[in-house]
Amino acid sequence: MFQIGFLEILIIFVIGLIVIGPNKLPDLVKKIIKLYKKLEIKFNNFKSDFEADIGSEELKKDIFNELRMEELDQNNQSKDE
Picture 1 (cartoon, rainbow, N blue to C red):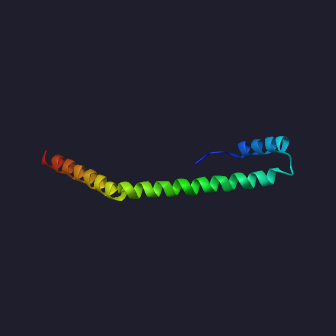
Picture 2: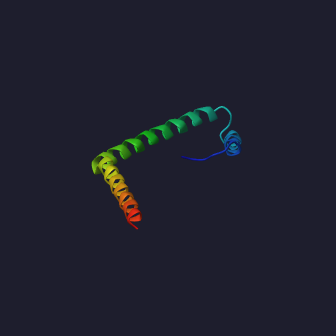
Picture 3: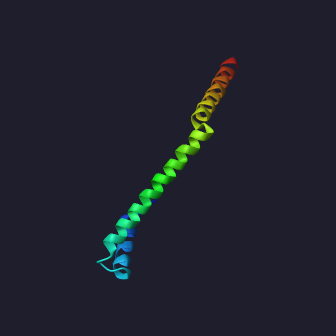
């Protein structure tokens, strides 16, 4: 999801140590990670519910079949020429 490198993590950690302090930083990091995981789970649940409601599997199959038929039609046309 996020593409954060080692240098960015190190800078965030140093700023966190300066602003929050070494005693409270581990607790804050744990809370942030828990919040992130909860949001990720809720988003994934919403996404799967939404996909189930609109019937995304059927739509994917239909689109795949249409693309395959177009490909076959193009191959047949190129053979006829």
